[in-house]
Image 1 (cartoon, helix red, strand yellow):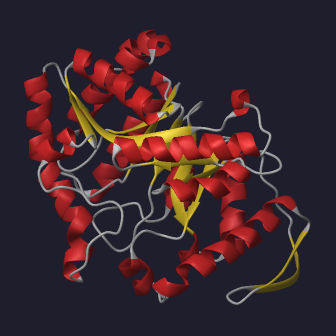
Image 2 (image 1 turned 90 degrees about the vertical axis):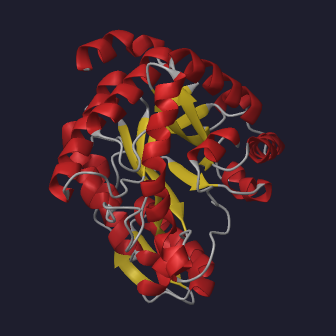
Length: 342
């Protein structure tokens, strides 16, 4: 079992320059504590994400960490030129000395794509073509591709990633049938949503993995992503969550409310208590956190747990304290490192 971090880097209680520095210091702690990977989202133009360029932010993160793996979860491929993104991935992989993970997707918000001049109805086709081009650029000496949205002929490729043939790939899976393609292509996955649905997704992934003749001992990471608030008592953790959630919810829903629409998959309740009750968040004392995480891992059938510690108006010290409790409880090998880092 491994543990990672997910970060929206939504609009917080600090000026933007201070938020960036605080976040980099927090990621330094994640590195020292022994978390596997720092995953970050990509969103535009919305307070849900104040680091809309993953590559720029990850270049800074790479210089402030030593062991922690890094990556976008996901790069919104229709919003990027595929050749340019392949070059950025190569640069980041070398700047981090081979610690980049690459999440890929078409984007969850049609409104954000529309702002970029992308027809949301064409996003899936653009995603598939861009993925093909990027994989050519990462693994071959030149790119030759002719599709509806992208055409390239004899484009020379001078850069290759540090991790050959390419860095590990990630894909967000909201429904069980979405597990087929990543299982067939040995791609790591992350799931949100209700536990029963996550279990259906991980069961489907394992079934497809076995049907392809793969060993269960070489299974990629099957991740579950949850908000986590840890404190010295259950009451304190719930109070922190209640206070922070409205700001996060407002940022999350801003574009959807502006356009009078609703998210297709990631629908969040307005109240933090409801988020905890439906399993989308965990809040509590060290013992509560330990028990809830272990139960959730078992019920979901996952081998990777991703925590979102920072959201809304939580302060730097509150997030650091929460992440420290989690690390001490769930990452036994990191206890000494956590004590030194806090």
